[in-house]
Image (tube, rainbow, N blue to C red; front, side):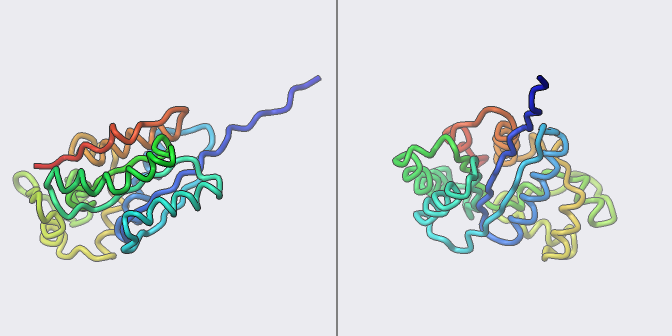
Length: 208
């Protein structure tokens, strides 16, 4: 008797981000990581904009998504700071309720230091293609205001420029350029497979 064909279980992964820019960039990069990883079954992604949701309210969102059979959660938040103490405090506000509910093994907390714009600066090739020109010397990396650097390099940093850059971003080129991005890729690759990365391993941001 022929055995029934077993289909790989689809992974359901949720990204919780601050706003539209973060949604655009995280989704674009996640899709490109999936293309390279080539899982047996393509994951089901959902991205939720936190839009000012209090830190303590994020736990409630995770609980709701659990009822919808989502298995892995990525909480990515702009820190607006490069202070280790400030970032640690912000991450703890999210982390502690998850620990109390024994959900920390399902969640990756990724601080964006000081914002997701730092990820974009890690791919100079994408910036050059989006701008239609190249620069002499290295692209400046202003730690505290990366969005200002992007605005100068691209002649603006609104939705139009963000969509253009997102098309050209390459996760492989970006590896090693930002610790937060590296943590995101490692955790996503594990989520696409059989394992998971503990929250504590992803809470060490690239800060000064």
